[in-house]
Amino acid sequence: MSTEVVAPAPEARTVPFYRTLTRYARDPVRAFEEAGKQANGELVRLNMGPFKPYLVTHPDHVQHVLRINWSNYVREGMFWDPLKPLLGDGILSDGTGWQESRKILQPLFTAKYVDSLTERMAEILTEQIQETIRPGERFNVVTAVSQIVHPTIVRLFFGDKISRDDIAQLVPAYDTAVTSKAIRLVLPFVPGKVPLPGDKAFERSVKTINEVAYARISEIRSRANDDRDVVSFVCRARNHEIGEIGAKKIRDDIVAMHGASTETSATALTWVWVALDAYPDVAARVYEEIDRVVGGDPISPAHLPELRYLRMFINELLRLYPAGWLLPRMAVKDDVIGGVKIKAGSTVMISSYLTHRLPEFWDRPLVFDPERFAPENEERRNRYAYFPFGGGPHQCLGQHLFMMEALLLVGGILSRFRPVVHTSVPVTPRLASSLRPNQNFEMTLVPVERA
Ligand code: HEM
Image (cartoon, rainbow, N blue to C red; front, side):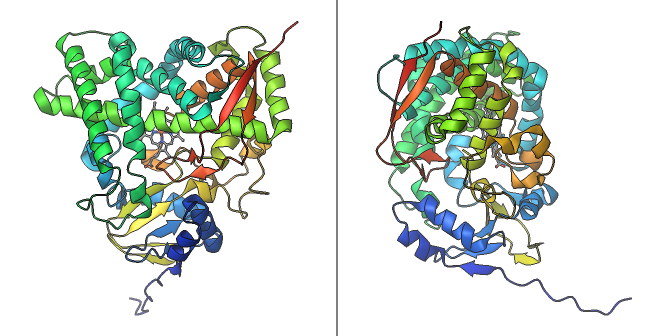
């Protein structure tokens, strides 16, 4: 038997994050970027005074947390707990509630089912674009994209079982619910019991969401149907769950999935216009491809396989602006990652935003270059150097659906219009649970002249 004594793993280096946050008080995402540079792939602790989360950015360490030892890193703690009344105990939680929901929802996201939704999605998107955008007139991009994406997903999920009035209530309520807790991201050590600005707005919006969701769920459950919409599917899958417990489980599945799908998609699709404006050479290639593949026809699912460059563009967009940019976890037991000790009960923060900008894994990381995602360049990459949709057992279920949505929306708009963005200062990310732009910038869509 070996008598060798193994030395305990050393503590992680601490980065004085509080000072950086104070320096970039108006731009906390920039403070994270600075901390990422100081860490340079090393696993560090961010000193935020009473709170010192670990910051995990190296792809091998990300893989450890998301996949290899994933069950030790749960979605609980000071980042997740305040959102519990919105997200519930299903697909965006952990443990048995999550496991059950994942099993129920997974069949909804097979390529076959998603493809069957694509036709309907193309129709709804076309209607929403026509309703929202007046060609030749300036409009607010953040609001317009949300007004297109949000009802599209709601209508796709609920089928014809949701009224315009319900949608008009749900959309702003979700928007408030996912943004009103942002302040807790920079003050995560403030206990939930201590009120902060935004708490009341959060409670009101959750109440509105619950009222609409429970009413529709109750209607759908009361009459058996074999409709293909997502809510009917979930109700059928849970028809052995009865009474209030069943209704709550269905509500948690629907509301959490709704939250996971709309905020991320709308945020990602807002950055499209910023990138097209900032990179005219890339934009010219996108326009050329759409003109060639779609031309003046209404966009349809049949065009999508041919939109190869647009797909690469969207992948690069999600590299520099990953909507789900911060994935917090809580360590259940002590662990060691990359030779560094992780203490039980502490917060571990994974940030795709920082990993996607590491110079060790990305050549010229700040340059927007869709060629990185050309098929011949994809294989050389470390799997966890790029994870806009997370990884391991919690990997995003909507990845394929999002790509369909992005190609249909961007291809549908650009086959008819050229965007002119109006900004006086660069659009940069601002701190929220998703990576939103820091300003409500405007744009005009100019109709494309076709011979
Ligand atoms: C740009 C669009 C999207 C991005 C960037 C994104 C990103 C992510 C990320 C990073 C996760 C992992 C969360 C974690 O590990 O804690 C996730 C999970 C999830 N996403 Fe997405 N997502 C997008 C669109 C969608 C869409 C359209 C849907 C559904 C229609 C969806 C449904 C889900 C669900 C249900 C989960 C939870 C999976 C689980 O924990 O088992 N997402 N997403």
